[in-house]
Image (cartoon, rainbow over all chains, first blue to last red):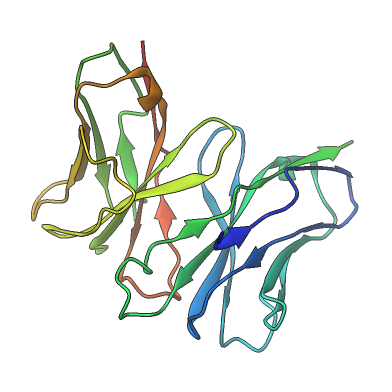
Length: 119
Length: 115
């Protein structure tokens, strides 16, 4: 089974609108972290936001917020007031905390969503 | 405070040659991860190293690929006898610890092109 699933290969959004990028995850661990990264056309990986499995509040970082629904195992990224510079690939990723299973420390990525902001 | 440094940024090799990719983690970070990204795909885990030790190489092809992270110096990903299918972007990331609640910092990647 896929650990991270991003079901939207591509999205087109009008500038200044809000956008939600979907991410569901699969883990049996109690401790895990969920991360979103942005990859613009220049190629670098830019960290956006983090949500821990024990965090009761949804994470927020400026225009980015994470809609964390633990029971549904979803961690959707919400970008408010989208800008042209938000056009990029967006990756959801997870690190798991089961220390008895070596290798869970690695970050596992979804396949990404290509977001295009339309002026 | 320099971030994760990868070099070269672009590397061109002919089939059969060797490719050596270097990664200097952030200062104080002893955990290094290598990922490969094919065009229009996500990042695939290759190998996880701590100083002088390979912790997890489950994503590494069994042949031609090797990685090291010596006590002194950068981490090296080596690809011997490269083939066209090795053409990809290779990213290195580092973290302070292997904890699940810690983010990974990524380098800018090395774009390997095999002619």
